[in-house]
Length: 323
Image (tube, rainbow, N blue to C red):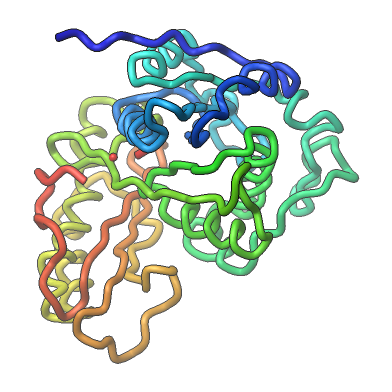
């Protein structure tokens, strides 16, 4: 039996979005924020959103390459723009509305000025201060990144007024910060509390986390990139023996790799706080890695349990859902 393909309506402006959603709030509105260049990982997020919305709800996919979250020398100009293919994927997976605003629509006063670089034209614009976690892990290499992420996500929440929002766990630090923002700023949905769903990372057959940036990799770099997930799974396999055993296994796997320029490899608490010197058996945690393969910077992470049985098949062949 062939599943009917929806044709999502496209909203380009705030006013258009309000009109398109006016008759679709008979159930939960579920938002999937993306920057486009959609792949199977995004498709899994939209499917989850469609399931959560049900027949009476509406799924909104936003497509917006947010300049505020890109730093100097990053890939804003070359970030893939594939709108026609993205729209087709959204329809195939059951999205009702695709919100694809321009930069001027999202930042009518100009892109807010970055205090660290002076870039941006919106000198008086209000942005979201993401707190100290934003300066750690990804923030060490990408200062100001999470200020950009949380600002645009807060804008999307205000514009769409979703009841539920779905994010991939591949960007785990982002997910933690968004949940904190929703709690600390008392952000609610159209009908009560705003539910944030974190969807497990969708992976290729060899374990590589799906990412829009994977298309930058040539064949050799693509082979090398699979190292990241192997490092994480090595940690997960040895986590039952303790934190140091997990880290030692991950580092040993990394030493056998070529072409991977490590940025960080860490195991943290699930809220990304540092783990204590003595970790109680059965403590849930996250292993996180960032590295460059060629000129492409990739990130990945995996849940694990310190001093207890692993919670999933600890091999790159296990499939976890992402962006």
